[in-house]
Length: 174
Image 1 (cartoon, rainbow, N blue to C red):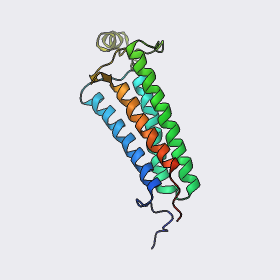
Image 2: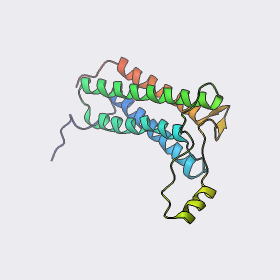
Image 3: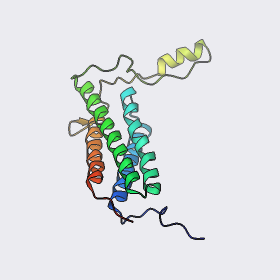
Image 4: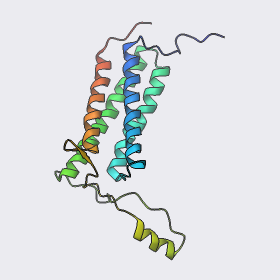
């Protein structure tokens, strides 16, 4: 059985490589966010969780684009989609950083994730005593003066640049 060469992804195509690179970088950013949450105990706020959404979508789009987008038109659409997702992510990161620095007002409901429904009054009282509220306006950790939201904004901006670079590249003729 032979596999059609139009389905097999190729790393010799610069646009395919950029699609793959953006997807792998988004995967690394999500893995880092989960690492900080699960290993270091940095609980995400509502805006932190929202910043993950464009990366989740970009991972799926990049995977589909790398394996399925063999035509120049499909590659262009995938790269355009990745650019839009990374622009969204950059905007969310800048907004969240601005909330942390006090430049912007944060969402009214930004106080942490919802707790599970308590089975009874005793469980509810225990939840009240043990639940830690995470405010969007407080950076849990900083490196070189930037919070994780700020680093996400910079990383997303770089990935936006890679997607735009791919859009500027001439499609490879197969």
